[in-house]
Image 1: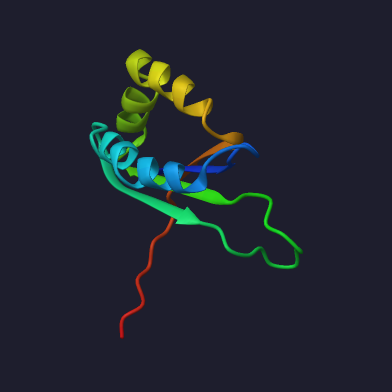
Image 2: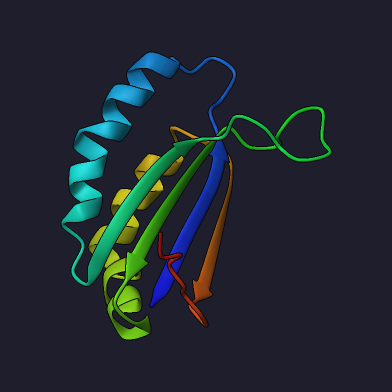
Length: 108
């Protein structure tokens, strides 16, 4: 499994409520339409350990079946064009691509 993690903030003049509405509806739908995507999560970061303030406010995690699926979807020219537009709405983004090594679910 391949995971794309995006950490970001909003520009100082951004409308948080309008962003939240867009991010949890229209944008979430667009994310879920990506071929090979298994799961997409969105978070508001509330704290950071041993830091007075977390360096990022928002986090998106998108899980893909495999690297081939991820690359085909994420690097698709049409998707990259959309991404360039979305990047105008956020600030300080960092995109991390990771490959799953181990997953364990605790049994109750």
